[in-house]
Length: 412
Ligand SMILES: [Fe+2]
Image (tube, rainbow, N blue to C red; front, side):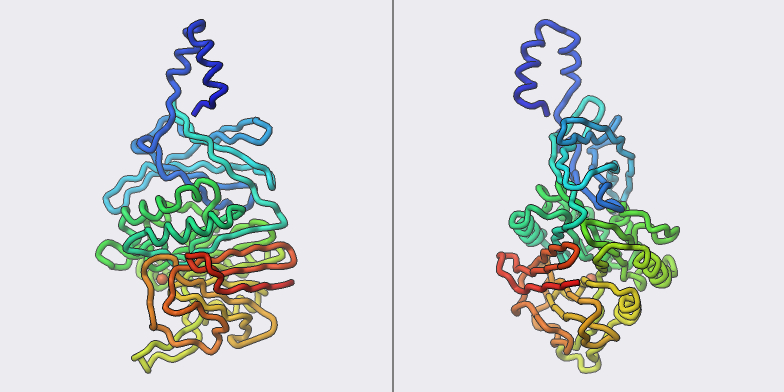
């Protein structure tokens, strides 16, 4: 899109220089019909981020132009990364922006042969501070709930550096209409701050509700390389602000009939990855919760530690993980510090993040002895805001109407 001043200048020149007019005619403002679903994804570190977009058809010479505050521009070519799922061919493109400097404000736009998108702003985060929006499961029949909670969170925290979705982004991982609805709910957010996605079990369902590999999720989200041959993009880590985030996949049961070894591979990777980080805060994001709850009318189900908890809590203790965010149960529960699978003074701090879609489980769970704060019942949607510096992490949990549910401060 050409700005007002530039447009006025070009009008004056047009009659005098036919060659200039010819060049101008080649420029076209890209519309929703040309490119759609422009969005950002976290890179390995704050100097990188990935820009993704889709063409209605295959695009010629796709690129992303980055403009610094000084006005200097740099062009990054966009790779064609198409995929077909649910009989829907997605003409997806991805460009990795590199060399971003902390706290610098940038603009970027999409370029194709003869076309240019509108300039979109973002600010690279500081290395000392971080604001993260954390959203629980958003799987829905109608994604207007997801839109409401996401837009509310960003409107009230527009200094956020990134947003996280804790898995079960969509109800059915093959249904391309749900993915489109999920992305469209994030307009005004996804173009400006990067997403850190977490794989959930619902990403592993096909249209017949049979388990499959999470084809759409893996293609939509080219997350930082984890060095794995078999489970690339299933789990990953990244740095932002004073935090090192380790994003696990808890879907080893869903994947084992197709590919074996996810759990064992991740356990080994996590030890290396956490120990290699010097960041003040080590934060784990994982979909399935670490605790097991009793359920009304099912007396055989006992309170305790879940399968995911048994596999990972001892490792979190060993690695001095600071905070563990979980999901899957669609209820907000703050458990405080747990070590050796019991209440402790020092150790990982556990938060079960709640629900951010229209699938809710009223009166299902019987409270766990390790719960110290529970969202008001029956629950509505909620979101979390994590603000971190080198010494302190503050986590606030809000209902979708903005009412504060919980306020946690963790000091080093
Ligand atoms: Fe789930």
